[in-house]
Length: 272
Image (cartoon, rainbow, N blue to C red):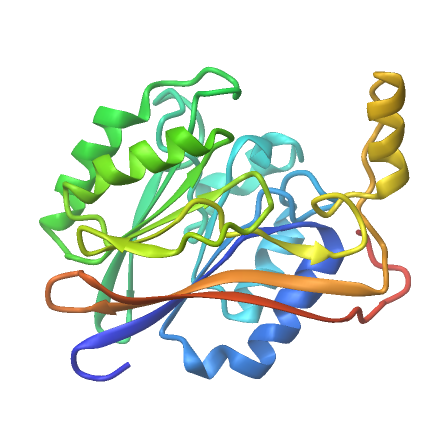
């Protein structure tokens, strides 16, 4: 960070142990480059949900805020710790009585940064409309800080693009699409807002969007559901987006995709 800008990195969906290991190793080598670290963690614990153990591990890696999506509820112990997990944000457009919060303002090195999580409705479980909810939340946060980031967890590309342009009109600093696990080559700046349709995923490169190939193949060939397992190949990948933001007005100044792979470090006995 200099006097006028901060550099943020956002990691796409972290999938299982391979994804956790890849992000851990990436940050061990590169953490000093970034002023603020955000990651989508909804697939981090054996591919579905987030355990409290893994939540605490991510804090140890140097992740400042964790966002999620529809799978955050898949590990039932989420209900035992979500209210005290002050670096975790769940989609803001779940009904108000749902546990957790949909936005946070985190202060780091004297700079306040707002983070919002929201979820789409096209080809997804129906939740409350995010359009007015997010518009109002941006306005509330802008009374405190001009720097506001959002993870929009959604399936349909058109919904992501349209919602991003809508949010850019209200002063959002960065919009990160997640959920589809395939990094898109459309990073850009829209109305001073950094944008990517999907940040991609962090995990095993040899599977199908982080999950084991044979199980995926069987489901497509037979139409019979069976439990997905996390891909356990020899190579992992890290997908992320770097954004430089002006601390005075919250404008995105530069955006850059991160896509790298490395040989996976196996640790026997640990959960996926």
